[in-house]
Length: 591
Image (cartoon, rainbow, N blue to C red):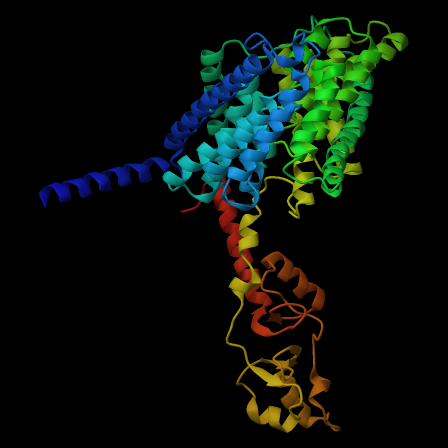
């Protein structure tokens, strides 16, 4: 018995310590946890990268960690057989996953579910991504990096019983660590998290996210060595005229980025409408990607080797444009045929190709203005923003990959131009557009899950007063004396909604010179109804549009069976309370 009490006392002390370290305002404890998540992310990136290189070495016979897309591969049957095997493995992995339904990624988790992700699903995503990238398909590993790192962060957060906003920041720490470790770029990883995963920047999240990104970078470099870098030479001073080609390149990359995104989805729809069984589509996609690899192996995998080849050598601009078209098509076929993978690095390679190709006419028009490699880096940032989003993240990526500060201003100008052009003409990045295609209305990682949980079904009163539509005025007055209730919901014989009636208005009509004879003369809001699945924001909008103080809640728009009633005052009060709570959570000033 004494041992049991001692054990309980020790558990209680641990619980007290956890609450002290990770309660609201416990910044030191949360910072320690963020560093741990960053270290895990660095390990995750190193492990997944190692497995990918190992697959390339074993399947294609290339030297370990040399970059598949930069290797001089022989044009033989392996270029077709290996991607097809990757397609069959992808189908097998999809069938082995027992739980059906979509897999929640970090952006969706933070927008809708308060940072809750499934670690098991994250492992399945990683296996699928390895089945594509590791077998040479034209996709990057960033999806696996961020998914598994964020999944581990979510698991830790759930074990620590963190509050909702801390969970969201911790997911950002996982993603920041993943991107930082992948490129050896902690500022890029941090602002990737702020812009894309958390959806906002705050002083509360600054320290943990930056700490996670730095920890991930250090761990990854300790395990794998030097990070990916680009040599562009000395840029020199930037003149105002240098911004003109950067802005033009930003617009061009935005338009081409939209084209690539639409090609991916069109390919996916074409595969779905073709009648080809879903289990066979990845294998057929492997055949097509392998066929493109016969033209140039540079379209294979993420494209790190191809990036070095095309930036470090003098390549004809026609060859750059041909490789751009083949890489874009290869990525579209890979994603559209059912493989799992990201377009992060693919978008960087495509932008670099366009930027270097654009340097040719620029040299004709203004000799010596910007080097071809500098234009490639600017295009890389602009195209990355068009497809992925995050103008500051892509700008810092240009800075950290090149080490040249002057190029940052041009990259930022191109990135902002690209971002604005995409928003005005298309409205989505690739990730948020795919949410839109799946029926999700989210456009970023801003936390809208709480408002979705604040539904009419949860707010409504169920003890409603109803009356039949064929009741006479005298019967109504007898059934509902003045002061008994404010409103009565009128229904038909099947319980379907007809209208709302004000009790005081019916009784006040007694004093009129010519009293109304039919109860239907008092009907209001016949067409204005609430559904239980509507959220508080939608309900508030309907109250404003209908000028109603209270509305009936019906089961659906077909049967219109009355199930409750909701007032505008109660809706706005609960909405304000939840909104105030969210603001306190973000600023850390809650109780």
